[in-house]
Length: 263
Image (tube, rainbow, N blue to C red; front, side, top):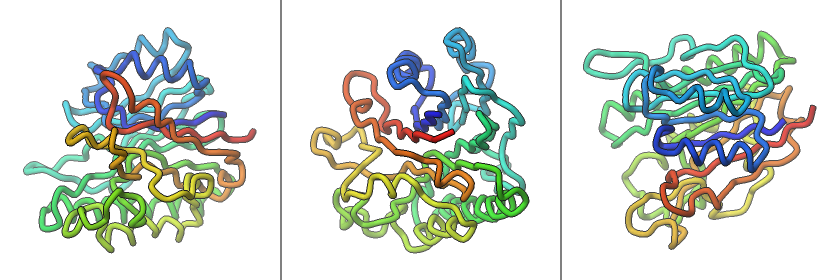
């Protein structure tokens, strides 16, 4: 099975790119983040005509997550138990969706950005990651044989070499010790971040800002990751970052990451 995940940065703006990617890379399951639309605005029919089933969770023009599968789509879950809320009138944002696809429990995750270290969104981000981790421990313990993939945009830079210039990020989010600790804590559940296993090289990025010619200068960040449960980790045969998807007119600022999973 080929499982890909991608912060698409608006599915309606990049529908043609998503469909072309599915066909070109022979993708079985695609987990999307930042679809930026409500459920009623998602282009379900375009994917269904291509032979895929779709589950989407979107509440507004912000956030939004989806799972697109041609190997089954069962037991859809929007949000995880105890997911922290945010806002002046707190709501459970559309940042997490799960479905079982080809026997694998796939979670498409869009971790909160954090904004600034002294912003309430930063505290929200840490609570969000902590609650997700606690759930992951429970899911794995309850069913050790269940393959689970926690994939998406984590908005965390685990290593200094995961950005083009760590000094540029001094005093900013994504690189702080609490964020890095929260990210690394998923190993407590026995999960393994498999992209690093197959792509350990320094300065290997998945995101480049649109401004200041970040992509042509290769001034990027590595913030898109896949944590796999013990039942899935050994089945991952390879990981690819599709850097070419950042090229050309209308590209997302993130690129897809592809996992090849053995039966």
